[in-house]
Image 1 (cartoon, rainbow, N blue to C red):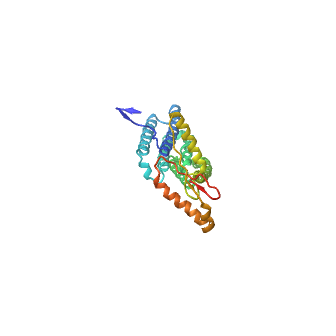
Image 2 (image 1 turned 90 degrees about the horizontal axis):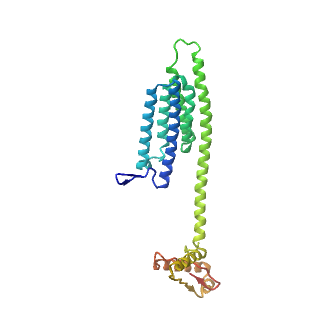
Image 3 (image 1 turned 120 degrees about the vertical axis):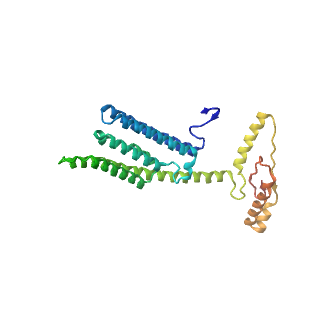
Amino acid sequence: MRFAGLRFDVIPEEPRQAHRLRRFFLGCGGVAVVLTLLALYVYAGWMAREALAALIVISAAGCAFFYAWLRSGLNLRSRDPSLTAPMMIASTAVMLFAIRAAPEGRALLVLAYLVPLFFGIFRLSPRQIALFAAAFMLGYGAILWEAWPADGTNAWRVALVQWLVPAVVLSWFAGFAGYLSRLREHWSRAHVDLVEALERARTLILQDDLTGLYTRRHLMEVLERERRTSQRASTGFCVLMLDLDRFKNINDSHGHAAGDEVLRSFARTLRPLIRPADVLGRYGGEIGRAHV
């Protein structure tokens, strides 16, 4: 996006920040869904237009605030750079405000809190999810207490049912969300272990474990790549092979450990002598020779 000759990317190129911004926009989509439901409440006469307008302004301001927080990079100073907990706090407060503003349809609107609670699965721990669900139910209970009719003899039963039904549903969902959160953490650790294992395997494939030089397999890939490049450009390239003669005498006289140290020392000697564009590797060795 360009404005006044300046380029501005809505989503940055840095992969992790880009992932956080995409997840943030997903959460904003959930906010839009809830606001659409509230528009139906206004149509049904369950909520005042002024209350919906206030919720739209608050939601838009909140989304803009969190986007600026994420886009500025200041989120990286937080323990959770995704800012999931602050977003959940804001969502909980806004949902309670909406429930208070829609007394006739609050029982149905309570279940809409599943949208932000589901959003918290991505980053929050099971304990944090349970705390947010409990805080929401306490706030909902306070709203029911505020609206308690003074002359209704059976009003407490209705209020109790109105509180218990969503409490049971949210409790089950919090437990299920906790299970998904633990599953996510397990797969996250498994992914890290897999990446580390692949990196170790890649190192074993590319680097000789004795000298730290590139392996014969990688050298052959480099040679093939250079051959194709030289054919396209009609130029040549140079290959230099060093052969350590009578290497077997070292192993026979001083042992294989001494021979290994000779190879390592020889590799350390060669590294400072090559250019950055050059490739140094261990091609292999016969019984009495070693090729580098």
